[in-house]
Image (tube, rainbow, N blue to C red; front, side, top):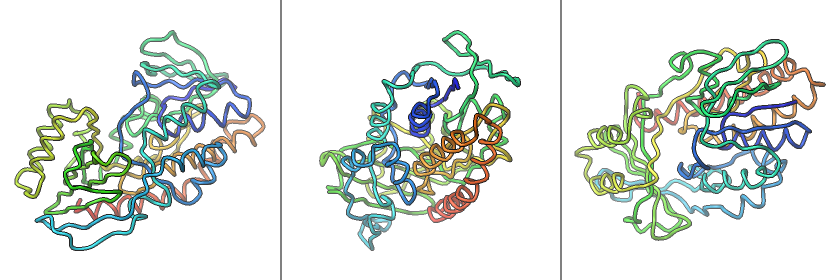
Amino acid sequence: MKVLISGASVAGPALAFLLHRDGHEVTVVERAPALRDSGYAVDFRGAAFEALADLGILEEVRGHATGMRGTDLLDAGGNRVGELPAEHFAGELEVPKRDLTRILHAHTAQKVRYVFDDSVNAIEQDADGVRVGFERAAPDTYDLVVGADGIYSVVRRLVFGPHSEAIRHLGLSGVGFTAPNRLGLDHRGALWQSSGRAVYAFSAADPERMSVSLSFASDSPKLDLLDRAEQERITGERMAGAGWIVPRLLDDMSAATDLYVSSACQVHLDRWSEGRVVLLGDAGYCAAPTSGMGTSQALIGARTLARHLAGSGGDHTKAFAAYEQELRPYVAENQETGREGARSFGAH
């Protein structure tokens, strides 16, 4: 079949690899002008290792492990009061997200067609195929369309309805960036919490730099969609008066070239497919960053979808139904973990 995948982060390229291996003609379209270089470290748990092995990249991914040794718990004044084991944040294996996306792209770049700096803007389907319009490229027709384009999925909005009907905010927003290693962290993390606000920082590959996330209670995920100046202004307001080294971290945020904004949200839908269009990963069933399962869920979802397409004898309706039936209990469990994680950070 001729398949279009929207999104070139983790779920999209993983599915592209598997579909090409099964003989399909695959195109991946990505709104960003190049591979995204921002984002937190990602970790793998449980069955995600089987997916990495199936993709043939497990050992290569292991070579980029952050090697975290634990996280110090700090009080409001920045004093160490406890420790969390490495696996609490890093799972069984943790790597920088940019390394994972580069590996997936390298393993698929010669097998599937990538189109960067473009996005889907229209979808019409009938019994014979899906007619897709693009912001830049000429329209084309596909047998299947996969929305693997994140929590604000264009494919989901065009086919399933507005974001407001699918996205549930968990009361927490935050920003991430890299900064000078002001805490002298060495393959360790530090977690500071006070009055509905939190700072998590860690340093792994580069001893001179640390990755930082600033999180705070919020009423909606609107921060994600604002321009950078507004994102910085709101973050500064919410973190004002926090003490410790937070003022210096706010200055680092303004200077960062890799600012990443992400609210804790989940995606809930009654169905993950409509006709010849199907959703994958965060686009269909985001469990929130607080679940720690986003990347594992994306990889397992891609493998599950590809397996059912391969075993359906070309019947996409049958494949989509089986994919959803198998994966929903796993997703429900991860989403509950995501809600618990948000509450533990003081979100409402």
